[in-house]
Length: 83
Image (cartoon, rainbow, N blue to C red; front, side, top):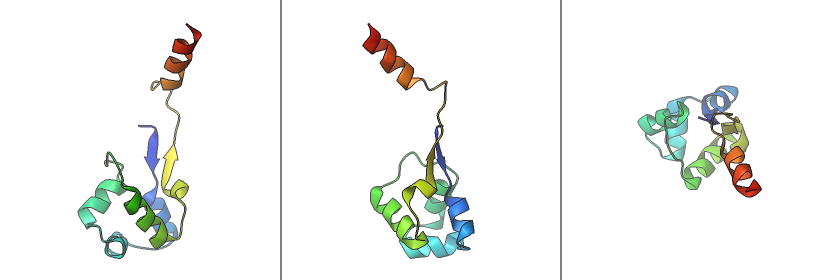
């Protein structure tokens, strides 16, 4: 998956536990764990905002895009535009 969740890194830098963050943003520890492990299929902007507010960070510290050559969307778009 080309989107990497670095929430655990951001939390470690700020020395905040999962329990503390979950309580601060009003999310269950189970749902926070799903988000931390990258198993979440989506995240609400309100949740992302709450996480960034609690950690004092930017969304880019938590979410990272890694280009995946097998994904190939840009190549497909280019091929369609070349026709």
